[in-house]
Image (cartoon, rainbow, N blue to C red; front, side, top):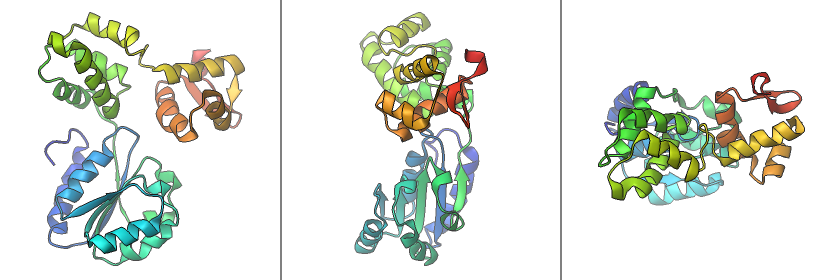
Length: 261
């Protein structure tokens, strides 16, 4: 597990588990992490090191079971497990003590307790700034940039690895032919090309504008007004705004934080 940056405690435990799993010892593991934290990438690395594997993003438990039995894959990743209907149909397979199963989710609260009790829980920690800068640096190899640029990229990406990866792809497209960029050029590109202001993309800013206009709103109302599904609002927009202290969620609904009025 040498290519993955961060989550050192999880990787340390995984290394012990993978040694056992390769000898046929069964495990059920649940990766829980925020969107963009790399849980799917790490899970793919893990199942690929155990045996011939499959990766599932399906909502029908029957289809998952059928495909595992048909392909006879001992090692399997079931991503977005919270979306799977009839999840209890997986319990016999999890109890069979034959398979290496990794489940990944960003909504562990939506999973039944009976399912979670069958799994080894692995909850991803927040990344520190050094780890995030390392991720950015690795993605910008070949470009001449300074440490101040890495810090700016981390802030603009809301301290989320997945956002950093996407932003670095965009920066390569803009500055690759030039061979690098300064922090002044980076800040100009963030605002005038990528439309990111103070670390907020257009969806986050629209969300704040809605609340500024109407005061309070439910998740359903915000989803309808913005034309964005509720999962996206909750997981990709509100997670950023809550982390920045810009909004609050109360029994009355969503509103701007007191400091943001």
